[in-house]
Image (tube, rainbow, N blue to C red; front, side):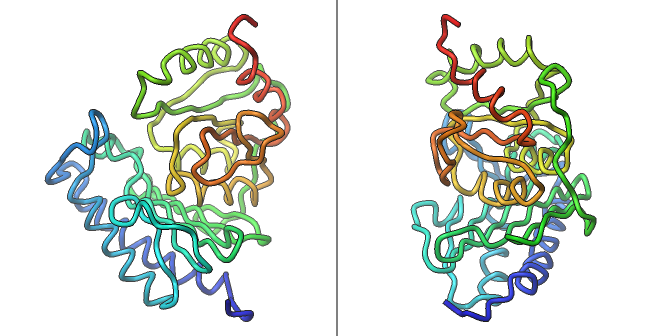
Length: 267
């Protein structure tokens, strides 16, 4: 790897590519083009494919030695010395129905860690960026997680796996607990957006099962660089990309949220 790697400079160039991709999403919003099913409720549109192709082309010019782990075209790739992790259109179902809660998520894996990340919410006009060790930003302004320290004052978010029948019992159990212990639960349908909202303090926590590396990579670094904490549902288990479950929070509520997720069904 290049010892003189300048993550901030790479981020600036990557932001240009992500903004260009966002312009395609905005242009196609309300008319998603061809929509097909990857699974019973797992959709992909022509916009997903166009955005991913553009991002791979632009990002390859920034780091010619890099490779890609991308949802639509290289989902089985492994993480190498320099790997771009791309979700071109998180919230495809929202996009297909004209809902604005859609995101593009791009992260760069370097050696053994996430080096930088970008989450663009093009319809909502917000670009979240982060560099490891340098903090997190929204539209160029520094962001931090919330300072909420009481569960009853907290707002949390979640998402539902595509294989919802398999997870249905856990989903309903966790919802029951969260609804009775927090101020509310939100479910926009785009994990990258949820993690960005934890990072900027709009949510105090987020949990979900069965997410892929491209759903979470940029958001994990964003939350951590904004002062938050990320783990599995068990707070003592570090989160790994592609792990079975993720819990992200403002750090203050992490242990309490973890207990709610880990308690036995009889509790």
